[in-house]
Structure formats: C-alpha cells, structure tokens
Amino acid sequence: MSPLEILTFPDEFLKKPARPVEQIDGELQRLIDQMADTMYQAPGVGLAAVQVYKNKQLLVYDIQSRDEGRELHVLINPEIIAREGRIISENEGCLSVPDLRADVQRAARILVAGVDREGKPLRIEAEGFLAVVLQHEIDHLNGTLFIDHISALKRQLYTRRINKQLKQQES
Ligand code: NI
Image (cartoon, rainbow, N blue to C red; front, side, top):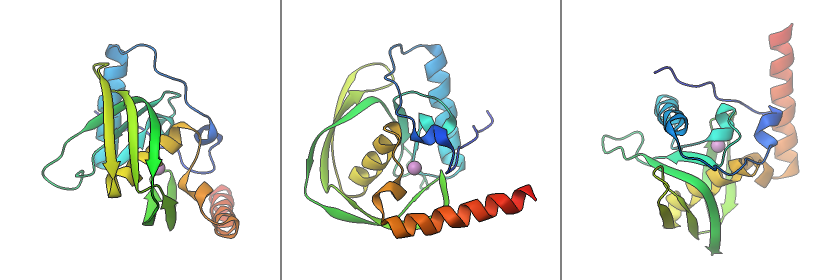
C-alpha cells in the first residue's frame, strides 16, 4: 500500500473543521489502514484525516510508533470532555508543519470520548505525552495547527520562511 500525501502548511484544507463520521464501512477501514501506513512511514506518532485531505473526524496514533512494540489506536469523532492542569509540550512538531518545532502549552490531563474503528464507544484518560498527542490531533480535526498556539511573532517568521521557500520552488 502506498502512503498518502500529507498536506502541509499553508494549505487551506488544514483550516477546515472536519465533519463527523456517520458510517463505519469498508471504505473507512481502508482509509484507516492507509493512514496508519502513512503515519508509520513518515514517521509520526499521530495523523488526522484532514492531513491526508479527508474531511472526517478520524485520527490514528501510536506513541510507540518508532519502537518494536507498536500498537495502533484509532479514534473516530473524538471530543475532549474534560481538561485539567497545564504542561509545556517541548519541541512539539507536526508532519504538516515542516521544519519547525516549538514549545506549546497544553492541558496536563484530559478525558476524551469517541468511538473505535468498530464503532464501540471509547473513553480515554490521558496524561503527559499521550495527552499532548491527542490534543494535537484533535486540534487538527478542528482546523487548528500547533503553530496557532505559539506567539504571533514566531508564527509570522515561520510563515515568511515557508512563503519564501514556495516562491523559490516556483521560479
Ligand atoms: Ni500535526
């Protein structure tokens, strides 16, 4: 299976809030498998459907993706129903935001509700790195990137750098 193309900033599609998944069928299962392959190949610890040009509230994650103990998790129609505390996520990055890492303020603990790939209800209590990954991926489904949480100045500098690169590629 060939990996899917990952959209990158400033693609406007990344700003679109995703629509809820209404039907879990064979097509969705294929998309999940392709997203998992794409995430592992990248490699990354999480991938949201909007990053591969699918307007669906769907994400995959595996915080062990670089290790041998891989365990794929699928989350459909996720919602953060409680947040507590604050942590700084150091050097956060994103497959859709190349060549940038930044510290981001996140909730330290969250409770997430959603369904798994079989449609079974899920509740995930997460803290630390897992909480950060889930907040980052759920942000994607709401059209938010981690650079929306950093200072306006840093974001401007990054935008300028990317626009310059794009211009150089054109000419
Ligand atoms: Ni991301």
